[in-house]
Image 1 (cartoon, helix red, strand yellow):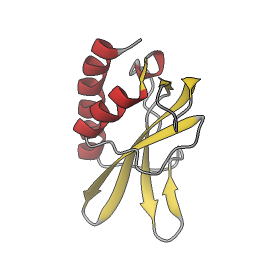
Image 2: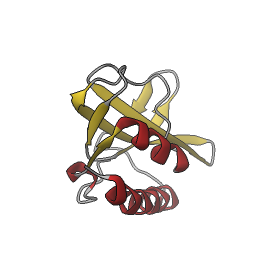
Image 3: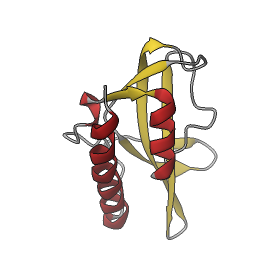
Image 4: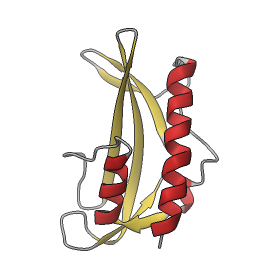
Amino acid sequence: MKFEGTGLDQLSAELNRLDDLMDQHGLIRAGQWDYERVTYDKKMEKLGEIYYLRIQGFITEGDAGGRHAVVQLMNPLLGKHYYPHGVEYGDGETFPEAIVKSCENTLNRLKKELEAITL
């Protein structure tokens, strides 16, 4: 599921500041990056099912392995994990309303804080 109209895709920020802010909202970058892209995931569980809120971004200046990088964010995604195949983000997926609301709340709070540090 793609979250359209959040405004996050209009924002860019310095990578180190973005990492800190995302971490405060439970979105972890971990090893999900290369020199041109980054991915932040927040794991959520409900009734034995696992869901991930994912926010991706691409580097517009510098690189993710260097001391300076600027990240342009993309539209957030919500996916459901299927063991052992991975996470599905397709239109055919259904998500509990509580999970969707939690994601929307996280994205709204995140956007407000990102606007304060955006470039």
